[in-house]
Amino acid sequence: MQIGVLGGGQLGRMLALAGYPLGLRFRFLDPVAEAPAGQLAELVVGDFNDEATLERFALGLELVTYEFENVPVTAASWLAERLGVYPPPRALEVAQDRVAEKTFFQRLGIATPLFYPVLTRNDLLDGLERTGFPALLKTRRLGYDGKGQFPLHSPADVEAAWTALGGHPLILEAFVPFERELSILSVRSRNGQVAFYPLVENHHAGGILHKSLAPAPATPARLQHEAEHIALRVMEKLDYVGVLALELFEVEGTLWVNEMAPRVHNSGHWTLEGAETSQFENHLRAVLGWPLGATAVRGCAAMLNLIGIKPDFAKVLAVPGAHLHWYGKEVRPGRKVGHITLRAETPDALEAGLRRLEAALAPATD
Image 1 (cartoon, rainbow, N blue to C red):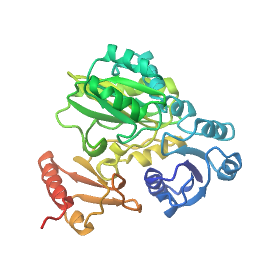
Image 2 (image 1 turned 60 degrees about the vertical axis):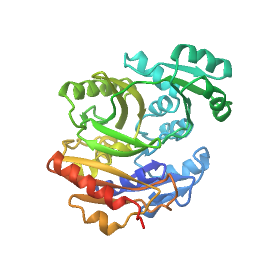
Image 3 (image 1 turned 45 degrees about the horizontal axis):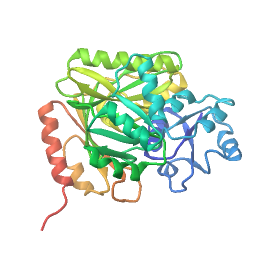
Image 4 (image 1 turned 90 degrees about the vertical axis):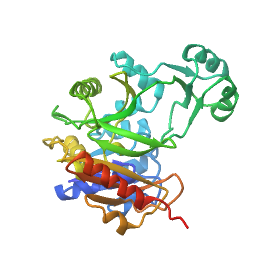
């Protein structure tokens, strides 16, 4: 049975690694010949919008999924007319535009930061009358890992922000005084079965996810239930199939949704060794309509991204409970080139292991 994947990055690579023990085969479509998934499976190199390429890609596939949310909706819809595409193209359409995404959440009664669409400089000034300072100006499309964003701390920042981002459809968001950033990964199968992973606490550096802790420390059960209820509403409204990630703010004991990712997610990499069933295996089970696997944490777990660095593998693997995942990508500043998962039986042991890992990753000093 062969599964098609739109996108050939590290998420696709990890989908293939999860699928091979299940007897699955994979074909990837990516415009870049050096895409990491091509190290493991057939890679069709071409434009997502080229119908001849899509036809070649689709030939003989059981179904299609995707590993990043910037796949053109037109390509996903074209394929959906010919075979199953999961998650549905509608989920892509909602997630690709931040205004559409937040409007979707609001219509479901889900709390989000105050936002204002911006097309002109006057729109930006009008929006700031509503949001006040501080605020965040973002592109409506394509921004990720802190890209396409400009913080506004005072009126003195307005001109620089407009110079940097003006000319594109934008969204202005009010600053949210959150206590911490969380995420929840949910999964829904073609047969309607649903499962939820525990809330994860996320820490960012330079706008890029640096570390995830699972389960999120000091999290009451009611917060987990609230997150699951939010995710269920989203999945049911979209008739969703696959893994869905929701990025959340904890604000005075409640949850606000920042954005969603209709795919397997960086904050779920800890599941590879830290959960009974990884997010990657459960995504494949879901899109195939197979029974979902258990999502319980095996003790407690963490994930550290490797961003623009290649560590000493031996030092990393010397830490008890540590597992290294290298993506086979060229090392460049700001680029995710791998990650480390860490599993331990207790929070204290996890914290001790994280200290050892961070020391192993620290640059050498003279």
